Length: 201
Image (cartoon, rainbow, N blue to C red; front, side):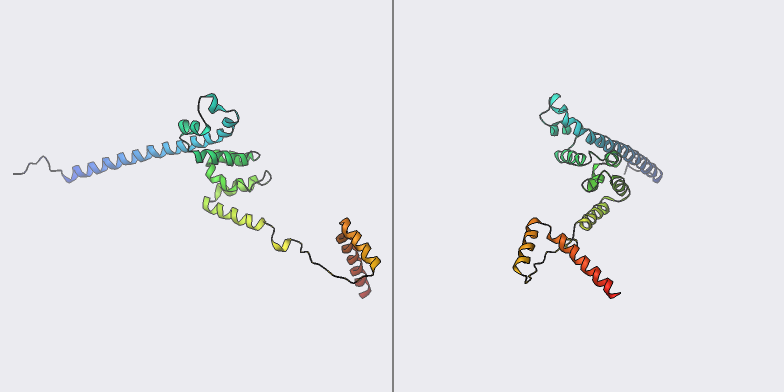
């Protein structure tokens, strides 16, 4: 004969599931809040690193390195310390982007750190604020490619051979060694072309 103690009614099952869902949601909520706070505190710790290094706070407090200091007190890895110091060094003269690190984190600002200037920091801050990180990285990559001087913007040097009287050849050679022959040739050609244009009218 089976015991009735092991049987659970559907209503009891439903209550147990409802309680489990409530507990799961509460746990998730707490973890999310703590995680968000942890990210915020890590951002704040990262912003302090350059000054901590400059004043050697880690040494004065008995730690063997900045890495040990950051790991034991904030749980930061060696890589995250190096990246924070590198990026914040690039942002030293860009207060708008430095403030953005405090708001959204160093990893979101990192793609623009090397391309931004003190004059363009607002532009790049807006891009970092609204673009997803992977889109921002692509945007920065394309920007760099466009801003590199291409072959069409580089002056092309061409060797020209002329048959000249010896006296004229010496004078041109002297101008060439003084380094201003191209400027003089441009002026000369402009005058000749202007004169031809006036005759054609």
